[in-house]
Image 1 (cartoon, helix red, strand yellow):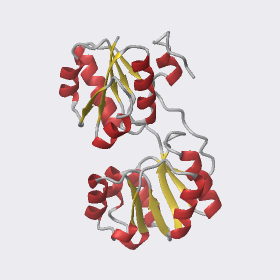
Image 2 (cartoon, rainbow, N blue to C red; image 1 turned 90 degrees about the vertical axis):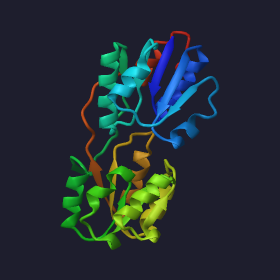
Image 3 (cartoon, rainbow, N blue to C red; image 1 turned 90 degrees about the horizontal axis):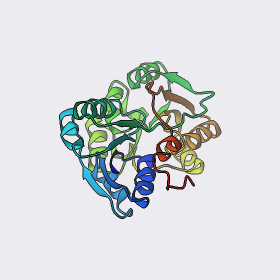
Image 4 (cartoon, rainbow, N blue to C red; image 1 turned 135 degrees about the vertical axis):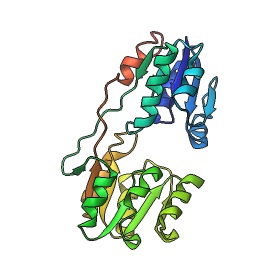
Length: 245
């Protein structure tokens, strides 16, 4: 089988490793060099780096038997482009879903703009863990209140600087993090509001949730976009010789 995976996520790495193990000719497309770095220890993969629009994806799909969209649950634009590109190329597509978390006690908002509006009416420091691309939504809030945890990349740091954050308010680290590490950050910066997405178990959501509860910070949760697809087990079932554990 000639398999094309759009990844950069934990699930994408697992699927690529398993597919390569069972003999699939596997190409993985990731958005950033950091995504490629995470795949570097898996033998037999062909790795492509860079974001692609629908036309580029359609051209890339030629010659593959199957495409799997294993991008992040909140990567709405990427998923739309993958769907359109595969449809144009006539290539079968599977969407790999990430299980949702138990989110009791969180303050739900539909998007980052809504989170910013909510927080504009509240007091206290804010830790943003929604990703560098979402930072502009919080431009209307006082910079002395904002702390951002982003990936340790030029793009992440640049986004923080573009928002006007003091460098002492930039936490450039790659997660996921333990409950203890999350809690230490919340206490260190006197965080009253932790803004996050439901990244599920691979994104360390439960550890964020427990840390917020322990440190007395309110959890502001950006709602997941609705979608349909298959679980990891269902995708792996396409490879009969591949063990599921």
